[in-house]
Amino acid sequence: MTAPTASPAVCPRCSDEAVRTVAHSPVPDVWEVLQCARCLYMWRTTEPARRTSPGAYPERFRMTAEDIATALEVPAVPPLAAR
Image 1 (cartoon, helix red, strand yellow):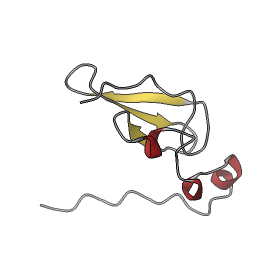
Image 2 (cartoon, rainbow, N blue to C red; image 1 turned 120 degrees about the vertical axis):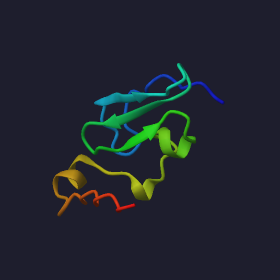
Image 3 (cartoon, rainbow, N blue to C red; image 1 turned 180 degrees about the vertical axis):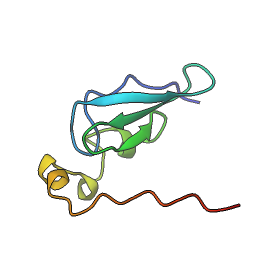
Image 4 (cartoon, helix red, strand yellow; image 1 turned 60 degrees about the vertical axis):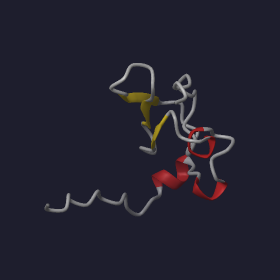
């Protein structure tokens, strides 16, 4: 397994610089989960470049500050299904 890379300077989706680490793997230095403070995008450091690198993130899924500010709705997270 690949060790996590250094936290990126910007979010792959919206290019904001406010990226924080929200979780670490149970086994030290295997992966981290990062989150953007502006668009709330989250990713694990072991994911492919198309999910973690601003230059490789798909253009059609990128967001600007204006896109976020004028969004009609932020989708709610549905409740967990009963087991």
